[in-house]
Image (cartoon, rainbow, N blue to C red; front, top):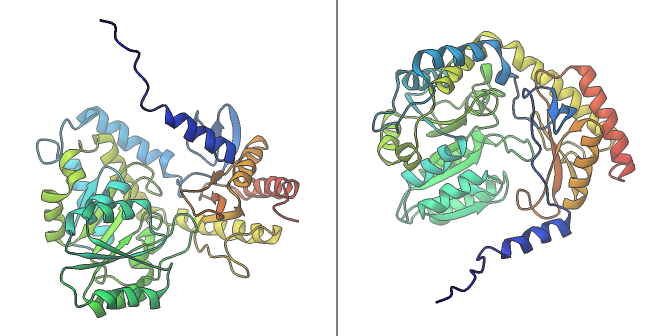
Length: 404
């Protein structure tokens, strides 16, 4: 009996990719061929790198390299198990204790990434009888955690405190717990969440207060302690999420809070329960990174010097950096809004050809009509490099009609 040729059930994906190409938003991954640095090599081309989250240059810091090598020699390359079976090493506990002290909280648990720290925590602490009140521009990991929890989700307009209160008031007499959640720094626009006002609302309506500090860790607050420290609202935020993959220079995410919260996540945080723990080298590297934050505050000062210079000069060139008179961005993340996705991708490609790496971002990462290239300066950029990048951006921007 002959067997009929099997039809590919995923053949429709080719059509989806063709549609992206038609819209001009299709991209290929650029490949880094050396260190993640201020100037590096992608696809064989040396470029000024304005696309990295390596805010402080810690990804290549000598102390972090040394810690990784030493831990590998002493403990090997892998942990061998999930944390709850045989994969909790002394290094993991040392890292968690160091972060808890740094963040001025009772306890901390480390996850495999910032994404799963958010998604795993929200889905663990809430259920279908509960309600989440979430900023409309919160990170995808918060959104996915909300969906996984099966809780009711109410979205408030970005940083609109009146609307946030309206949403809280609408459910204050309903059964179940309420969670109010925001990004500390919003990853696409670079603005800072209004944490003090949100804490006021959480306390007024008896809600759990949660902040995702992925892009604030190592950037805001004393020695990079994040938005809770930046605003002085210690003790008013119940769940603090952070990342070890950006300013910290390595890999992972963490959740900080009460001892009871952390122990509960040991038992119900699905990414914690079902993912192998960090390799020894990663844990040791992160421990060293927090030492550097304490010992080398000049890195954060230089980051802000570079940020303020670059942001000012982009505005002087006439780029739309997220605001009419005052740019929305308040951090090293500075978007250049182009509107159309095709134009953003063309701008990014042209910049790359001229020696500047700045990634185009379009729908669905940002809303339709809000496409942009996102730039991030780091502490390790020199002023000469930033001036060179600005010259290229101005020249290409004029040629494409993005600026006059």
